[in-house]
Image (spheres, rainbow, N blue to C red):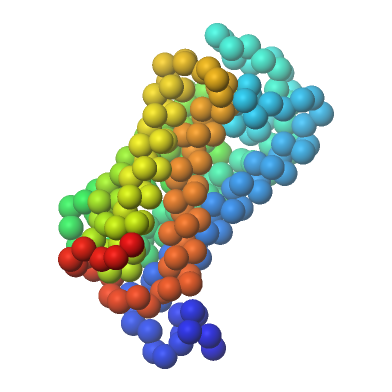
Length: 237
């Protein structure tokens, strides 16, 4: 068995949790990106990454929707998207349970991980309530996913800065991602869509959490045993 696997050399329970958490985070982000790409291929009308909402991929019916931004949506493979985002939420919540011991004690860790789990709950709400089925629940779920996810990155970045498994580099990376996500979310909510368009800013809101999950997940998979899951003095990036 290779040194990168959870069973090499008798790893501690924290090492095993870290490895599985990394796997869940990586799979969650990759399968969702693939789910979006595959669903987009099923569209019979043009789908614009800048002008269409991400949620248009999950619309259950072919119809004209939208109040201030009317548009015709038709997503024949919407079940792929809706299933993928529910899986994203489930895997995120499961990863948080495993990361609880990996990140160690502390208020920042606890609040950050709770917010990350709530972003998973929001993602599941988006999948279970497509925009053309229950718009109110859909929008609330999306806001929870966006706001909680990016806030979690900022808080967890402060934890990663001094974490023996990660270090300052990962901390800065996490905080910057969260700030970018919040900037995009504010542009999205205030309808300042130039120059990226509504879809572009929505994607810039979602991308930081997905990228964070992929990078942190890969780190835990490749180096699951770089010391115990606790916070210590400043560590090299």
